[in-house]
Image (tube, rainbow, N blue to C red; front, side):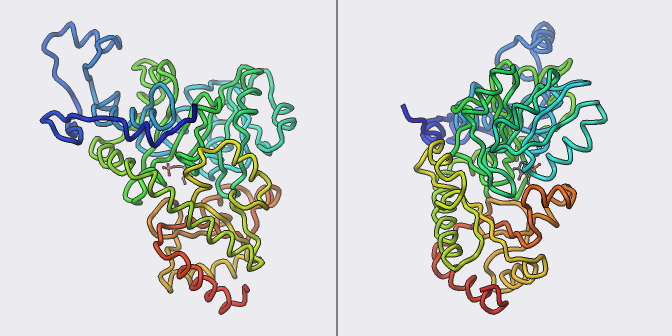
Length: 399
Ligand SMILES: Cc1ncc(COP(=O)(O)O)c(C=O)c1O
């Protein structure tokens, strides 16, 4: 049977505390107990339905977590204050002193910096590999490897991970496959394809209004319980907790995600096809020229399209900067990092979101100076947008 993540979100039903159609927002950091015995049991983790303290869990955070778990098809989920809060707690939960991680080399710059610069303080080393080359990945696995880490569609190069094959490899070597699915919510369901843990930066498409940061870890009940464990759980002890008011607002935005993704994808495909036809070096998973176009098609929940992220290469950083400033002046979007907003956002990853990656490594992975990353907005008239972008490129001699 086909997996339908948007149906799973649609089918959630809420009767708020006062019969509201939205769950009431839990506005408390701490909770009373009618008996001291129940408080003890809650600390021990066996008092169903009781809350202890909101860094551990809160009703609003649980509602959002359960909706995201339904979307990803996992047993449960734990929300966090940011995507990095989710990523760092997962990696620190799964790895300890002397352990090793094999990671895709094209990942979000912050994750790269955490793996490369921060985890070695705890003697946790990472080998960065080309995630499209399974034999290179297998060769990098050592007896200390605990985690295989990748993004389903990578930031910023839009490489696509073969999650089924990676899951098989992870099982063979007893590793946990951790997949950051931030770029492809709804269209790719990594847990259904075999990933052990799925992470999102909720900051992006899922929230979709660029008004907060947030993150989530989706996985088994056992793993999420471990993250929340009062004695040794990374989420509980590192303390990257989402606020209840934010959890409530993200839950409301999640309900329109399927409609927004359709429009992001429609507009992304339209612009990618036009840019490519204009002769620009364009990367978009929905283009036949994308090396993993067929792989993406084989993994996707097809109704949501190929997503809203694309890149073009205009040759030099100077040209990239000129074009981005020009497009912003023409109100075609914002020169800003991040993604998933209703307006188009553009940035040059080499000097922004991937600047943590040293220049020589950027070159090795194909991250060129003139690369512009677009998060395509919800524009109703994308033909008009294209004509205006085309005009900007003509004026600057890019076309
Ligand atoms: C793919 C990906 N994962 C994780 C993150 C980190 O998320 P946050 O900024 O919410 O901490 C980002 C942020 O840009 C990202 O693009």
